[in-house]
Length: 124
Image (cartoon, rainbow, N blue to C red; front, side, top):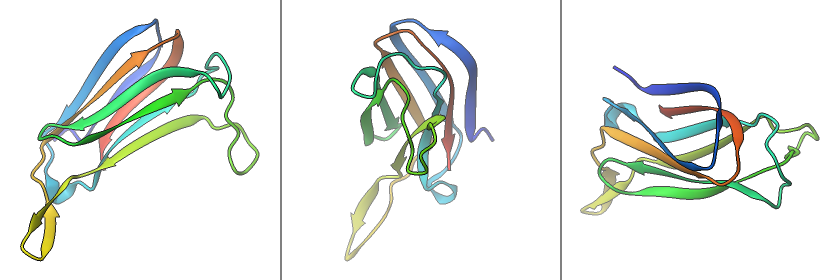
């Protein structure tokens, strides 16, 4: 049962790219996660190099901008990956809530400047 998909490191010219992962359930999944390696990304930490969206097959999701340049982590070292995560959506059920039924998710990126990265999308 595929729970992750990795696209090996490649150069991505400006454009729109999409990958998906499927065949998992709400019962064994907490979130959908995207991991991008940061391989000498161009620009500075003020420059948006890509706009990404993670969505569930049943709706709900999150969008974020990926910044270029060398990002320094809390430990003072360069950050080598960018991670975006979205939890399984919940729906109200009486006085409580429960996870919505999901079975797939999609990552879409609008790459604004050429960059090299490895992409992994996974159900965790």
